[in-house]
Length: 332
View (tube, one colour):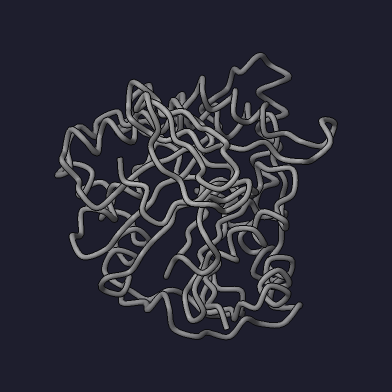
């Protein structure tokens, strides 16, 4: 069991396997953690200290245990994962532009498709962390089946990380923080894990372009989940039924989500010592992605008026990604 660089989420003490081999012990505080016997994934989740009325963790965890996202349907090998991932601009560009030898954390990896894809490049180390054991089992099963050597998965609460500060060159958290009780606090927690000069990538639901999804959700609830064809993904013939169901559940049945704006996330960046570099969409007016876009190069962050106009345009022109936006920052 590889525990290199992993520490106790309670006291940050070193961890070591203990007898029997299904347990891990902290050499400092003595706390013990289990190892999942089916997958070998270390179970290092530590509860939040939030009040039970505020904490949505258990509800979100239970939801994704039943409906892991995304599903691996039609992705049965490393080759098909690479083909599928490279069809998307963001994943392909990320794989091409992450510096050689980088250490990467995906905080909230779900079923680990992005982590496994990034791990196909031999000269980087990738860690996928999530709260959902069912998702992690799927991720680890795919990793083992395809012998992806430089990826490992573990169960972790992003508010109680199992790594020391400044452990990673890149931290990715895509579509995760808006399902937590404290998105800003979650950003602060994982931001500490980024090395100085390293990068962070955050994906959140947008308060403007999420509105069409909210309207569809209300229609589905009113009419007993009929009229699913209102969602463009559920009309795609190329998607299997499992993937369609996973998308529907994630978008319309999730027990908790919050919405955010460009200005809000830029404020988080500034407070936690990150310089804005890039965004999808770009928050400055009349700036579009090019076919050879450099993800980690400084762009203008735009004015408040720019943010309003870009977000309004996204609302009016469609929400093919569920009203989602991404920003990339560099730690000062």
